[in-house]
Length: 151
Image 1 (cartoon, rainbow, N blue to C red):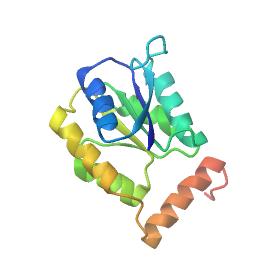
Image 2 (cartoon, one colour):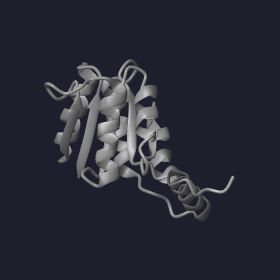
Image 3 (cartoon, rainbow, N blue to C red):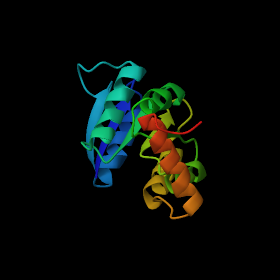
């Protein structure tokens, strides 16, 4: 799988994220502080990673900033992206299953190495669920992206 990864800071957990993804056999497309010479601002590098998902250049993305909040906000501004800020494995699994999230947002401040691995395990083990209500909600979000959702 091709995974776009951005971080606004060159932190140990961001480097471990890249290492973990590569170790799991994924191709990593780095952005921000993870790519020399790239713009490291969280809004810019998160948008770039998210655009790769929206365009199909990447299958998924992981966006990081100090709390993960800014990275998730920026990524969610890109139509077609459903970014989820996940602080634990249960949230990561639910984001994939119930929300069909295609971008994982992580906070650099509180994500330890063991927690990162647990979140990645849950994220990659889960996939979009088939529950009709969940699929309807995801379809509604897709219509919001297109500006066609009814109030």
